[in-house]
Length: 329
Length: 177
View: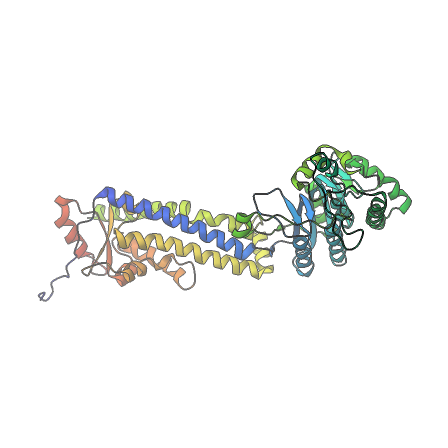
C-alpha cells in the first residue's frame, strides 16, 4: 500500500522495437487511407448518385448513341439512355435551385423513339426554365432533333449537325446462304411477319411498306425541326437529305442559333438570367453489377429508327458515321 | 528545467504538425473531391451566400466532416493504443503513457476528443492549447481527464530522470519544476 504523500507511480512499459513501431504506424495509416477512399466512394454514390442537387445550372450530357434502354456498362462504348435523360430533365424542372439546363451534346444520333422522348421532355422543361444546347463534335440526326427542342443552340463551326433523315439499312445474307446451300425455312403467321429479316430476300412490296413507315418517321422528324426552329416545312424538307452540315453551314441555314463553345453557352445563360452559373452535372453512376456485366442495350424495332439493323455493332456504326457523313443519307 | 519544458512543448507541437500533415495527406485528401463537388463557389462571401441558400449542401458537408473527423481520430486513437506513438510522436521521440497499469481504449479516445469538429468539442481545442501552453508542454486538459501523459521516449540512461519529471507533472499547476 503506498504511503501517504507518496506520488502515484508512472509505469513506463518497454516499447516494441523502433522498426516495428514505424511499420505499425505506416501500415495503419495506409489501411485507414484505403478505408477513407472506400467511404468517399460510398458517400459519392449516396450524395451525388443520380441527381445533382447542388448548383444553379444543371448540365445533362448526351453522349454516344441515343437509345431507350438503360446505359450500358462502363467498359462498352458510350451510349445515352432516354430513360435517364428524361428523369434528369424532370428532376431539373422540379428543382427550384436549378435556374437553367445546359445540354452538352456529342452524339451521332440514335433511336427515333428515344430522341423523340428526350425532345418532348426538353419542351416540358422549357415551359418553366431555359434550356440551352451546345453541340460539341457531333450533334446529328436524333441528337440534332433533341437540340432543336431547346431555346438556344450553340455549335462549333466545325461540328457535325443536321443529318435530318432516317436510316434502317441492314445486311441481307440471303445470297450468302444460297451459296452455302443453307435454306431459310419460312414459318410465319402474317405475311409481313418476317419482313426485314436478313435471312431472306426483301420483296418489292415489303420494301415499299417499310419505306412507307420510314417516311412517316422522317416526316415527324422534319415537322419537329420546322416547329422547333421556326422554319417552313418546305425549307426543312429541302435540308432533309440526311446530309451532315458543319456548324458554320447550319448557322447560315437557321438550323442553329450561334457559333460558340460550352463556355459561350454558360455566358449566355448568365447574361440571360443575370446569375453566376454554378454548374452541376446530372449523371448516372453505374452500379458494380452494371460495370461487371457490361449489359448491352436492346434496340428498337428495325422500322422507324435512325440506326441500322441491330445486326451491326452500334460502336462500329458510330465510328463509321463519324468518319463518313454520307452514311446517313 | 525551463529549457526542458520548452523542449517538450516544441516537440509536442512539431509532432502534432507532422500528424496533421500525415492525416491530411492520407485521410482528408480523399474527401477533398467530395467537398469541391458540393461547393464550387470561389471566395468567402460567395460560399456563405451559396450555403445559406442550400441547406442540403450544409447537411452534406456535415456528413463529410463527420467521416473526416472519424478517420483522423481513428488514426490518433489506433496508433496511441497499439504502440503509444503516432507517426509524429515517433519522429519526435514522444510517447503516450498511462497513469494506471495499462492503456485503455477510453483513455486514447478521451485524450483526442478535441479533434471532433462539432459543438461542444470544438471548444476543447482552445482549452487544450491553453493548458498545454500553461504547463509548458507537459500536460493537456484531456490528458488529465484520461489519466495519460505524453513523455519523451525514455532513454535508458535517462529513465529515472524522465520518470521523476513525469511524476512532477501530476500536480496542477506545477510550480516546483
